[in-house]
Image (cartoon, rainbow, N blue to C red; front, top):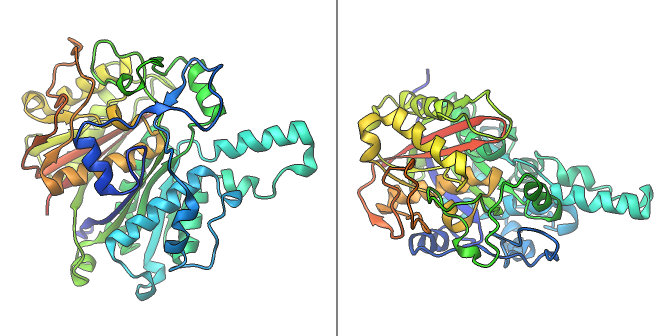
Length: 420
């Protein structure tokens, strides 16, 4: 096994609480909510009319930044919203890392960016055109916009990255799997720099209708900011969000050689499958527990070193209990000593982008020694009895922190980060 170490040197986000990592983390730690009534289409006939919408996002505002690297135009007509999010987050992450790809070996730099669903809005739009206006009016950009690998493909083109280039699609575990896979490419000496993360834009008519039909969403239309309430006994489903979270991963010596700022080291990565149900978690959380244990084993540490867990914490009746059991099964007595919080209480569930955004929040918790809170936790579910950092952020010296992501299909992924 290679002893090449992997560190995070740049981070970028698009979320309903901000399009910079500083704004996002400050807002999350202040207990603010990014859940708002949806404005992008008429929701009057929908049973759910709110979500973590990125109301201020405009891809054209990133054109000047993109022009530093490419002559390609960031035209919405050629990019689905999820691809736009990914490019925007990547531009921010690269700027944050201060890396000059022109001075790098392009075959040692790559990208792995995933999406749980991909270009669902393009599918919705072009299907409507096909059935209402005919086959000749369907856009030639349809497949290049909607394919899941459009994000990583466009990022590689913009920055001239000729190394490993893949896309992950493991539902809500996507972002974490992408970061873990990106770290593996560096550890195995297939790359020195990897751009990794997830992007999702399923907050559209078809996406919302699908989750409404599954009765998976909270229906608190009269109080959207209080709808996402992980581990609260009055929770009634998750809240959909949208956005992207992307990190720049580097081999440690490579980062040191250019005096890069390092947010955290990626020291552990674990995966498993529930093999139980296509949408529901395994009730006892055994698969999730295995993923966390694998991340600890990968890092070569015991569970009692972990100070903080950014939980999957979706605010669903089954999921929150299963994850609580999983944490107990992994950490034993230490489970009651570790701080656990869910930032989905503030920005909702970004599906395939959640793991990327939450890994960034976890890295910032390490970097700033500050644990973000779980908001809306007013009445603790008796079956959820850990320290969920309710309401207020907590100052804490964080050395090791874990980020969990569990997805439809039974996919479980855990990342373990360390202060450096």
